[in-house]
Length: 269
Ligand code: BGC
Image (cartoon, rainbow, N blue to C red; front, side, top):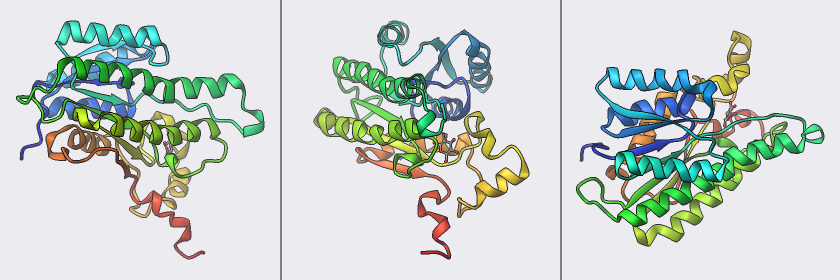
């Protein structure tokens, strides 16, 4: 079976840069019309650059500004996308931020900001996506499923992360959100899965790879001995959104070069 997302509409939140941009590019190459969501005016140029790279290669898409932590903005985004593009077939809940702090110094603002984007944002977008999937029903000329949701989680869905309690908590909660939705909407043929990336080379973690020393130290956590690239995640996202993975739902798929084998136990334990 060919891996194709032809004629499907995919909203990828937070896709003006990083992992989201990689997913948007891969999905557009697979034939989807992509909605490149960006959070604020500051990211408009970056969103347009991602769109240009896509259209230069013959792909299709639009850019759309929306802060996913804001209910009214999310509702409006889905409404506008359906008006312009007809429906939504795929949601990639990718937008995510870090506001790191030692726990006793973590402010409520830092906590709320991370939970707001990483968890509440995924809730709001998933809710609006599922409403649209159910309204439309299955269109078998495009996909066997009624709709597909991919949550972008993290290895920190299961690996505790000192100094990042807000981030790790948001990712742990995404697992239960994802599995609950997969259970609740399985009979409606809506597939819901999570991708759990390890260290992918983007701006969010540049402190972990920007000098050779930092990169060496990061690689001690990765048996496969290379940092990941957004394209690695893009490939998996296309697979999970396509009919090739039609029997996969309720799964967290780790894509981390082996980080979750806990390499620090190679000689210890
Ligand atoms: C974080 C990165 C980190 C990686 C592995 C990701 O979820 O956003 O900052 O490098 O996990 O620890």
